[in-house]
Image (cartoon, rainbow over all chains, first blue to last red; front, side):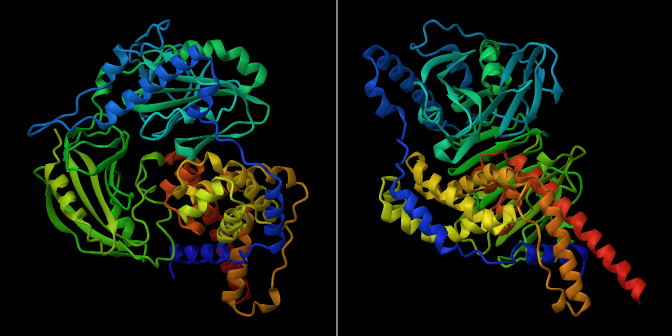
Length: 431
Length: 184
C-alpha cells in the first residue's frame, strides 16, 4: 500500500470511529427548551418600515428601490444582440447617477492606485486584485491589508477591522437588517449608493446572503454595516472592533469608504453570476482569455489564477486555470482516479493534450490536497474532482504559460452539458 | 431536507421542529463530536446549537439551505463552547491494547493515536473545515459557503489540517518501522 493510500485509509478509519447517535436526553432537553424559547423576529425592512415616520419611510423606500433597481437592471438586462455581443460596462452608469435619495452625498471617484500589497500600507490609493467587485480605496497611514482573496478583503488597524465581502446575486435590504439595531439608512460611499446600519452589539453572527453566509463579531465589539451596489453586485462592508476603538475610528473609516471607486478598465470585467449569452474576455485572469457563452452559464469567480464557470448546481463546471505542473501526473498518484490515455486536441488553434479521468462515487476520500503541489499559491488550487465525477483535463501552452481547462460533470450525465462545453471550448481564443 | 418541514418550523411549529431535530441531530452531533473530540462536550454544544437554530430559523430565507445553515451554527457553537471547557475537557482515552495482536493492529492504534493527538492541536476552524469536507463530504466550495468564509480560506485551512495529520501519520509510521527494526 503506498503512503497516500495508507494515510487516507488511516485518516478515514480514525475520523469515522465512534457512534453518532444523539443521546435521547439531549433531544429531550432541546425540545423542552424550545417550548419556552421564543423565535427571533425576522427583522427585515418591509415589515419594520411601517413603524417609521413617513419622511423616513419615503427616503428608505427610494433608496431600497434604487439599489434593487440597479441590481435588477444590471443582472437581468436583455442579452446583447449581434454575432459577437460584448457585455457593456455598467459601473459607469451607477457611478454617474447616484439615486436621488442621497442628495447630500457627492461621489468622489478615486484613481485606481496600486494593488493592495500584503501587510502594512503606506498612505495612498489601492485596488483589490483577487477580490471582486474590484474596489479602489484611499487609505491613510496605519492600516494593514490583512487578507484578500476572491471572496473577501480585510483591512485592519489595531483591533479595528474592515471586512469587504460580496453576497448574493442581488442587493437585498435584509442583508443589513440582521444588525438588529436601528434602521438601514441611505448612504453613498464614493461613487456608489446603498444602505448603512449600526452600530450593533457584537458577539453574534450577522447572516447575509439569504441567511447562509455570515460574518461573526467578537463579544464586546461594536459593528457597523454598509451595503452598496457596485456594477450590479452587492458589496457588503462591516466595521468592527472593541466598542471604544471602533467608535473612535468610525469617522476615519467613513472617510476611507467615501473614496470607494472602481477603475474604468475594471468595469468591462466579466460579470459575476448568470452570464447573458455573448462573448467575454477575462481582464483579471491571465493570459487574457476570450470565450462565448450560450444560455445557462454562470460565472462563479474570476481571479488572477483561474476562472470558474458552472451550470445549474455546480456539479457541471469548467475551470480555466494557470498551473505549474501536470495535473494528470498528480491524478495518476491516486489510485482512486481512473485516468485515461492522453489524446491530441486543439484549443484556440494551439496544440494541446486532453485526458479524461473519473473519481468513483465510492472513492475512499476526495482529492486531498487538491492541486496544491502544482499551484503557486493556495488560492490557485483546483479541486481536481469530486466523488462521482467524470472529468477531463485539457492542457495547452499559451505563450509559455501552462493553461489547464478542467471540465467536470457527474458520471453518466446526460443533461446536454457536453454540447454546451464543446461550444464553449470551440469559442476560446487567447488574444 | 424536507422544505415543508423547515418552513413550518420557521413559522413557529414546534412539532415540525421536533421532527427536524430527529432527522438532523445525529449528523450535527457527529460534526460536533469530531470537531471537539469529546462526546460529552459535543452533547452540550448540540443542545445549544439546536436551540439557536430554533431561535434563528425565521432568519433563514431559503429553506433548502437548511442543512448548510445548521452546520454553520453547530460549528460556531463548537467555537463558542470549546475555549471555556478547554481547561477541564478530558483527553484521556483507553486504548484497546489487549486486542492489538498483529503488526497491523499496532500500526492502526499507533496511527489513530497520532492522528488524534495532532488533530487536537489544530485550531477549531481548521478542524471544522476538515470534518465538513471529509466526514460530511461537502465540496470545499460548499464548506466555504456553509461556514461563511472565503473559498481560499477553506482551502488553506484544509491544507494546514491535512499537512499536520500527514506529518503525524508519517511520524507514527517511522516509529513503527524503527520498533519493528529493533525487535527483528
